Image (cartoon, rainbow, N blue to C red; front, side):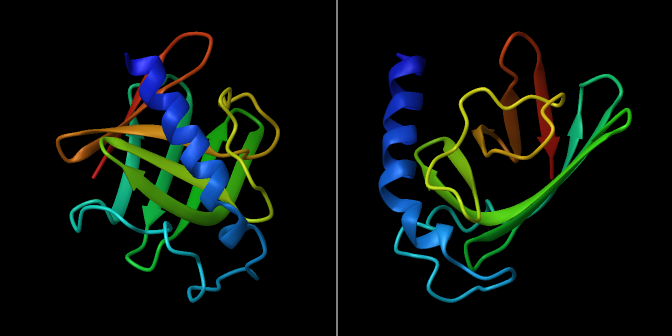
Length: 137
């Protein structure tokens, strides 16, 4: 059942990401109807815990934009774009992309988008190929 929910969210993200894909860096207006829609408690600053040798933060803004940073050894990732919520899932859609990656890991060379699950005040990242991280607000 969880897999089906993720597939539905991915399909919704693909359908709505076009509005985010052509935004200039830092643009907050015109992010599209789905970007930033969700619970008023979701926006904020989150710090990753529970993943060895990885430091990461996500900032979700009320206007639907986000910034992401991750450091893993000598590998640094940075991304910005729009976020959207569907039920307990939050998708981070990078600027210039129409979809999110279903396989984003700390070892990737660039940020390709993420799917996170809301758990209380936190966001949980099911890292493909094993592992789980918790972004704590």
